[in-house]
Structure formats: C-alpha cells, structure tokens
Image 1 (cartoon, one colour):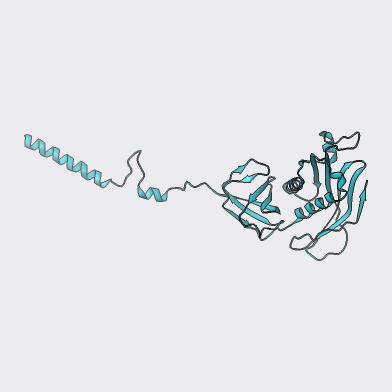
Image 2 (cartoon, rainbow, N blue to C red):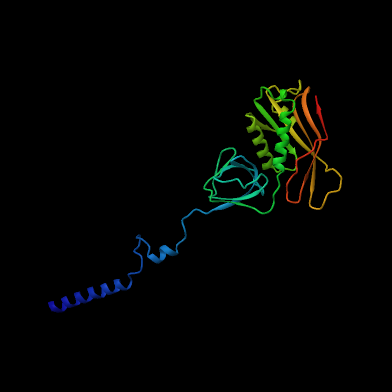
Length: 262
C-alpha cells in the first residue's frame, strides 16, 4: 500500500510539472511582461505637436507671431537661422508645452520647417516705419519710461501687432504699453486735460483705403498714416504713405506723401 501511495504522489508531481512547462509563455501576475508584449505595446514617448508662426524679425533669435488663431508671440533661438527671413511662415514641432514668459518659449523643439506658402513681410515694413518715425524730431524721445504702440487700425493679426510693438519697445529700452490714445488716457498714462504724456510717447499706424491706380495682377497696395505723439504741441506725422506688395508677398519699402510737425 505504501508503494502504491508513493507512486501516485510521483505521478501527480510529473503531471504538474508538465502543465507548467506547457504554459511557460504566459506572464506571471504582477511580474514583467513577455518579450512579445514589450515589442507590441504603445510607446511611452511624449506626443509631438506643431504650430504655424510668422517670422517677425530675425536678429540671431527669432521673434515669431502665432497664426491660425494663436495670439501668442514667441522667441526661438536656433543654431542656424540665416535662411529664415522676416515674413516667412514656419511650422514649429515641439512637445506641446510652452514656457510662460513674455514672449513665450516652446519646450522640447524637435523641428522648424519653412512653409513654401504664405510669405508676407508687412510686419517688417511697419517695424521699419516705426523706426523711421523714431529718428524724426528726436527731441520728443527723451526721458521715456513707456513706449505706447497702436496698430489696431492695420491689417496685421493680433499676434503680429503684439510682436511688432514688443520688438520696437525692446529696441529702445522702454516698457511697452499698447492701446489707442483714448485707452491710454483712460488708464492714466496720458494727461487728457493738459494733452501731455510726461514719461511716454505714442506711436501709431492707421491704414486707409487703398490708393486707386493700376497694378499688375497679384500685387497689393497699402495706404497709411503714421504718427508719434508726446503732447498737443509735440508730435510728428508721416502722411499719405503708400507701399506695394508683389505676388511673392514682399513689400517694397514705402513712400511718404508729406510730413508734418506740431
């Protein structure tokens, strides 16, 4: 009887080992997955997203204006950005996070691709107009804490206006405020009663109806006035300015119809 009992015990052990060997490919609950599961599982790498931006200026570091509803402006340093002209559209691929600075900065940039369409360097043209105004009657520019910029009456998008204004104020080391004359007076910057901005100056560009004259197909015209204002008796004006954009999106400088001072 003892021999028969021992035989049955050995027999059950052999069966149990055979069953374990047949199921050896299954993962142990709570343990490491099999090799097949490791190679077929989903990647844990963060997803990359892309956004379209306009190059507003390039001085070694790009100043970008968000497009397609993106109202942010960004700075982006690249090792080689010599082929990125102001006016170009670029597609920036990054990890989806944006550093909360002003201008903002992309996190985890993996690629910057130049778009073949959509070139328009109107931002660069209007930045040049503001710089030209700065040089006129330079006595108005002294003792500034603030530079006010009003581009609300131009065709530039909200982000393009913000980028041009920020670049201009940065060029001259003053704090930027944006708004119309009325808005800045309501906020207490401009002394409405005495028509004077003691520690600031307001630059504005106002587009008008396009001049009526023949242009080749694909070309566009812009007509505008530009002004810098410090007080009722301290202002300078570029009047009846015009510029032409070719079919490639390049604005070919501008002409000033007349200049005025007060």
